[in-house]
Image (tube, rainbow, N blue to C red):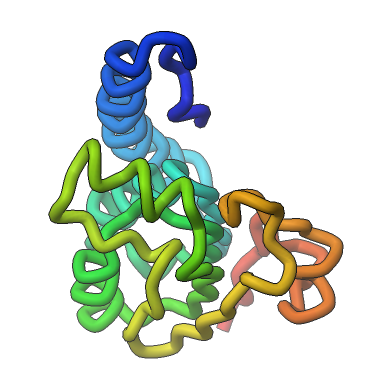
Length: 172
């Protein structure tokens, strides 16, 4: 998802672009939850969200409460999703989670308050929830802090080869 879909020369279309893309993330999360429930039975799913993609993942979770056992792992990278909302959900539904955050992320720090001053994005903050590992990415973030140098992140996070894919559940 590219939430920077507004025109860079016109800040009003930039603002409109974020809100429009945020709504798309909500709707896509509902649709993806349906697809996972209907077509991925018998598999454990790993969900990865970067930036506004964390809103999409959050909406998948909200729409899969009855089937939450299908979700194996969550990885949030520079997330827009609200820390409080995620922490509340993950406290009620513990899932192995990695939250990569950077308190110096200028995109999240400077731009998000323009859109929604109540947001406390997980990409800027420590996510306090059960089974959650928080990783401060400031040492391997690009100059604005929002894009991560994934080669460097790999050295810190023990990504398994299947992190972007699904795993077949054991029959036990």
